Amino acid sequence: MLVKSASFVISNTDVAKCPNSKLPEYAFIGRSNVGKSSLINALCNKKKLAKTSSRPGKTQLINHFLINKNWHLVDLPGFGYARVSKSQKKIFQKFITTYFEKRTQLVTAFLLIDIRHEPQPIDLNFMQWLGENSIPFSIVFTKADKLKPNAVERNVALYSEKLLETWEILPPKFITSSTSKYGVDQVLSYIGSLNENLKYTT
Ligand code: GTP
Ligand code: MG
Image (cartoon, rainbow, N blue to C red; front, side, top):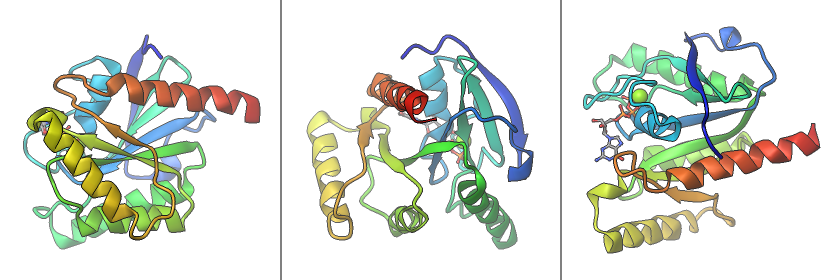
């Protein structure tokens, strides 16, 4: 799928104020600094569409971007960011979970995982929560450029092994780098195919 147009729509902390349309949307979630905003920019081929930073905690709102005038990408704040106060963390956490619980336009979530790290409880718990709430998700490994190809393969295999301890069927997975654009086309094709399927089911 080609991204012909991509524009910022609105930022929110209130899910009720997110765009009131029926357009399908795809949300990017994961730990702070994992590369959510960078991946959105890579998908849209626009360097400054979503704000990125080398310091964790950059994205603090629910951000909607309109793509090709007929679907939304959603950039969310990271979870597990240690440097914000406990009360602020709770507020973030609350509106992230409310977003997932209330947003019926959400087709699937993309849970981003830094390919360099071993499976972390915070990500595994979040997957558990998505599963319990019947929210479809895919796993997107990020920053693949930071490892040699065989280390990428090894870490992905280790991750799958870990997931198979609790999951019977594994979610779709993508290996990406926003820097080299590796895997970006696969994510776009997947979104394109889900958008196509929706045409026949709605
Ligand atoms: P929060 O908004 O704080 O939750 O972070 P985020 O998940 O949106 O991360 P962001 O896209 O802001 O990226 C964090 C840092 O990682 C930035 O310094 C990016 O340049 C870097 N980064 C993101 N993706 C990649 C990648 O694929 N490769 C490399 N080498 N660096 C990346
Ligand atoms: Mg961000």
